[in-house]
Image (cartoon, rainbow, N blue to C red; front, side, top):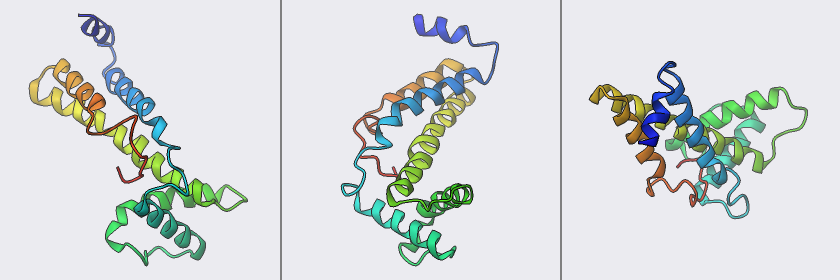
Length: 154
């Protein structure tokens, strides 16, 4: 099988297959990064980015709105604080949405592929089971990689 021959060529480096799967997942999720920016974003995404903007401008670390969704706010807030420390211009609303989407859609969701690969390999003691599991996740219509509305909490 062509896929088996390709992955057999990567057996010298134990990080090559997870890295390759991660890069493929990143590329598949890139279209949703800039999809439906304001004024067309999802309502919850508006609340998260607006709260992040308010927290950045006031300097507070406790959310006033949507307190149950801290994981939806704090990673984007910390990344925004880091970017703001090196920037002379304040981040605009669209930038906050893209930062949140970059963390959640690109890195966190793409990192799931590595977890699925390693879990499949660990359970079955066969790297191909891990690869096929990760590929099944990548092409699954449930995650909508090309049709996703781009919400940063997906």
